[in-house]
Image 1 (cartoon, one colour):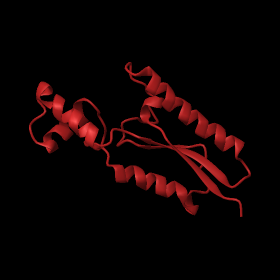
Image 2: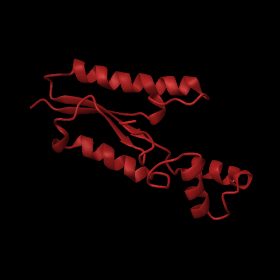
Image 3: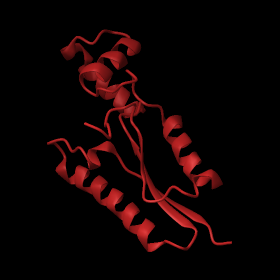
Image 4: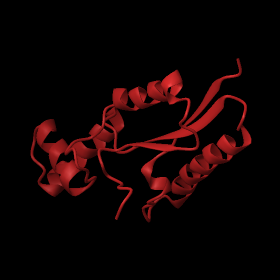
Length: 135
């Protein structure tokens, strides 16, 4: 049996870049393009290629950044207040909070299983609804 998975970790900035850090935005876009190109190249091999594209994720560095800038924005004092305000004003999404690393891991785990055999060349956005397919 020929079978395998290629899973890139991309990001929403690949399709909706911000003006700062254009080099980072471009590398994300290249990663998304690579995943689709690999999907085409690997057809008929049993290997799929996809992207998991996280939104803003609550990791230590993001928490520190948001906590540091919170006083300037009047976002409150507790982490819960800061996270809700940042998700409303700076990193807007439909869920109203930052994502969790385990939510990204869940998407990757889903793509690694046999129930994802028919998913190839896709971008799975795990961004709380930050980027919408329909405008």
